[in-house]
Image 1 (cartoon, rainbow, N blue to C red):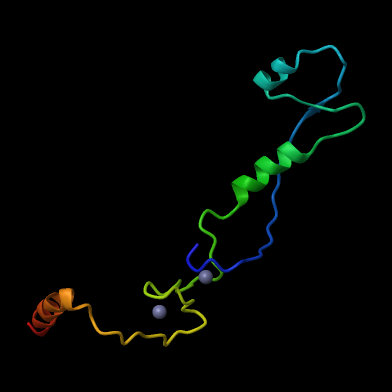
Image 2 (cartoon, rainbow, N blue to C red; image 1 turned 180 degrees about the vertical axis):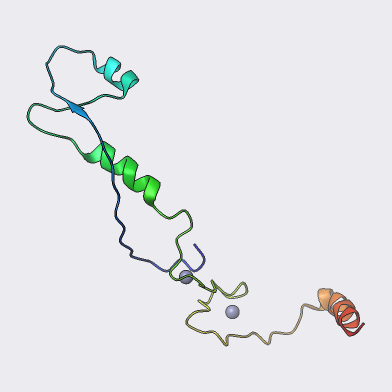
Length: 108
Ligand SMILES: [Zn+2]
Ligand SMILES: [Zn+2]
């Protein structure tokens, strides 16, 4: 979420789904309306139920670690790898006047 580092995680998901034997005599649209899951012959297609359960359990804002400092807003460096990261570039002359204002306020 903050530094774009790939992450891996493990979690458990519980779900419950009822499957009805396929009697070969039903309208697939009725199933969609009623939310009924059917066996396909002798086979059970777990993917839709599994996908729904997993998607809901995925973290909304995944972080590589709890206090990930993210990226440097100036150069995009990952601050976790380089915590003392600093830039000494001169302030753009067009904004130099504003920097003076902030300093005066801080001194007050
Ligand atoms: Zn991170
Ligand atoms: Zn930087």
